[in-house]
Length: 612
Image (cartoon, rainbow, N blue to C red; front, side, top):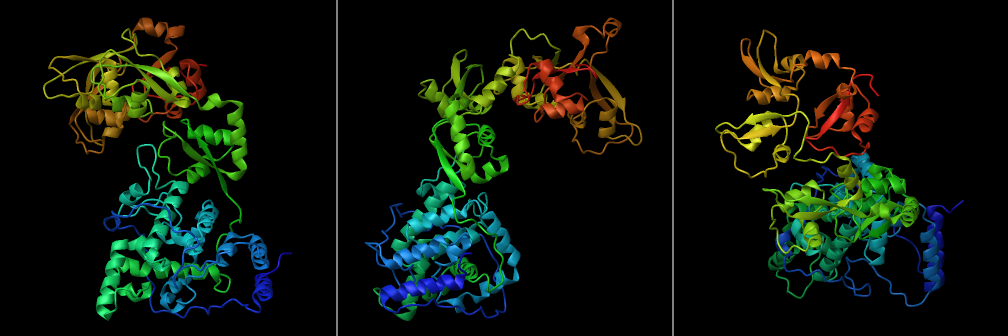
């Protein structure tokens, strides 16, 4: 059985006594005194205006002198008995919270300055319990990074008040991530943001950037950690202004140093609360047993490992090959905003420690699983590079690089090579090719005065791009009155009129004519939730009536299917359920696979009931 905490302290005291000649003991803090009111917790942010001139240089070395409010550092050049004894005790901490608690020092002399915040947390114990549970995947990594830089371990607790350890947290001032970076500060410290990725949400990048920033602030505040923390929240400019006001008020000379507690009342309100709030949390972690606060136990060992790859990867394939649950993979990789990693690497994938080896093994067996596939796209009138990139789930820059393009100009008729992740390449390959010799059901719409591609597409409940693809035109192609546009569907064989009866609604009419409520609304220029009145006439489209010849030949193979035009948001499962068939039947009769990426306007064959 491992020693209890008092016994561990005794071991440390004995080691100290043996090496330093009798120095021993750890200070004990009394429980906080009750306070009259609790302070409201708020998300915090950086003040970009105050840091525009700060350069992101490496932080001061661990051997630099520290102030009275800074983390005490011991410079050890050779192993000593004290160092060995201390290392032994640290290794005995199975729970990471014990490891952290044993090294918290910043608030020891300031208990009376944060007792109000202590009372808030003591009255709301479930808050810290929830936060400690969310910290599980991230905290060990953060602690190790803080320790490697010889920073006080209170820094590792900053995400408690910044984001509640929610990697996708956003504040009302556009601060994002565990460390709540605003865009300007994120850019200054190399956290990129694009359609694919947000470095502010990435656990690895944001942690390293936050610690770089804090170390720079520590240096700019004469090696004072409390002032560095205040600067992280309120901006270095506001801290320097507060120091100046304090000196003017007290008529101190410019060479004399001011600490956080002296300038506190000259700081923004939020920053006045920020530092005491962190010290209160640290005090609770350090004395949680005496204060009867429950924190979710966290193993004192790494939770994850990092794999660096230079190829674009489908994240669902990573989850499958590494046997990692999708939600856990997303929790560890919150920086990725799409289903695949960006096309231009290298990028890292964070995997649970026990899953990393399996992933590496699978990758070594078949590296082609993650290769980028290429497809061809023939440029049509109205195409733009950004629209082509969006369609194929890639970027304009990736297309330009592959095709040696120096600008965004496109030439109609030219064929572009498009890099596509394997998962999407398979889906695109399984879709029927669009050709000018389309033989399926179609209907022609004659353009009327005042109509546009958008209004016509809305009328037929499709998207504008689908309408343009059907007619081989661009989304910016001007229309002329009388122009005929092809509508690829068998739902528009003829128009009929229906006069509303008492009790009718758009929904009941849609059910009666086997169409959607949105279609009825579009055909009649109404809103889908609009109240209609008895006697009102509605225009409805219906498929062509079956002929006797077609009815008698219903058992023929060519008539065993009906056709369905895919709408935006449709999935195989939705279509199968609506048509009372199975997804396996749809896959079989349309030569698809269950992961097929459906596109609006795609025509599917639907087998009649009980057909296989």
